[in-house]
Amino acid sequence: MRFEEQEQTENKQQDDKKSYFGWLFKFTTSALIATVLLVAGTLTVFNYNESAESTPKKVNATTEDNTIDPTASNSSVVQAVEKASDAVVGVVKYAQSSLLSENSKAGTGSGVIYKKEDGEAYVVTNHHVIENAQSLEVILSSGDKVKAELLGSDPLTDLAVLKISADKVKQVAQFGSSEDLKVGETAIAIGNPLGMKFAGSVTKGIISGKERTMPVDLNKDGNVDWKTDVLQTDAAINPGNSGGALVNIQGEVIGINSMKIAKEQVEGLGFAIPTSTALPVIEDLEKEGEVTRPYMGIQTRDLSSISNHHLQNTLKLPKDIQSGVLVGGVQQGTPAAEAGLQKYDAIVQVDGQKVKSLVDLRKYLYEEKSVGDSIEIQFYRDGQKQSTTLKLAK
Image (cartoon, rainbow, N blue to C red; front, side, top):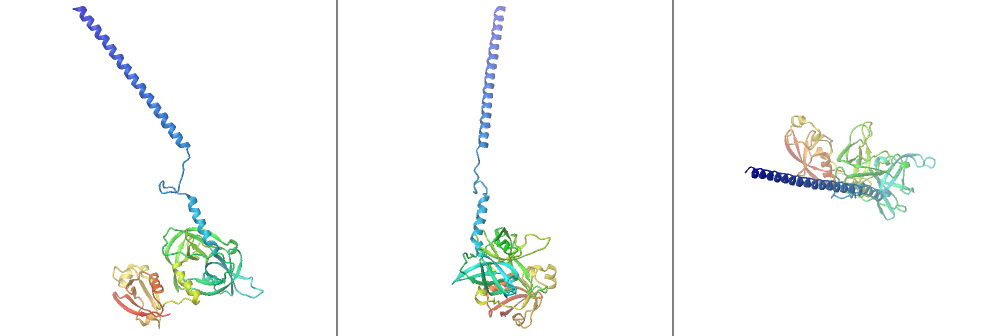
């Protein structure tokens, strides 16, 4: 019995050793296989990344990968300039036209050829460029000098129209819509800063603001006689650029460069007369030599520029009236005086249309009405809403 028990014990120990070595072999084999697979996978990933990095990436100006091709933008600007630049000219003003003094220039500005017809071409420029000129000369982009005739000018919008021979005129500008512009759009100024030495200079920026108004001092006595509508841009506009073109990315003229704010603490504030304002004036100046406008006979101020305290306590307006036109004064013998308007009346509607500002009022009068037309004005006086009928004069 003892022998059999000992034999059984020895057999059991041998079986245990076989089981242990079998397990150790399986474990070692599995670990080796796992290691090989891990190393192989690592090498594969490494080789893939190395190949991807060494392969040049193609960048396209598409919306799929949200990349931008700067050359496409530059090309558009170049094309816009090429489309408009030859229509931008120099305008030279001479103080006297005698033989001995004809070379004494009184000033140099810019202009835009906008029309060519029956052997003649027409140029729009600024009123202040040609003001007090004894004679005028236009210098084409080719350098040719052409005598110019002044057809008419308008100090309120700072515009003037000249007529020249079309013999050497190669290009006519195309006008675009300033009303469709959006703030942030590309704006390109073309003109002759500091005279013809830098003729045809191009500067690029954006439309910084729309429906701005700039004061006009007709008598140069420090009093504001008018406010003209302008586009604001940060495209550099310098002396000599006046009368030149402000164009969009399609090469269309959207404004006539007019002025800049030149102060030490100010940068990038240039202004142009929008085509929506300029085109009707250009047409009148070309055909009539002057601009005929409907006239009310009042001095005005935007209600939006007045504090709430005065709106409610001084003018006694309802709280919901925050915009309109305040009558600052009424001239005797004018349509406004005959209609019974008084100082401090607050105009809020004309012919049932809301008037939010002086720009709104002028836009309606100049684009929708003519001299001799009658308009119905709704206004507040001492907190009471009233109305009157006014017949527009010249």
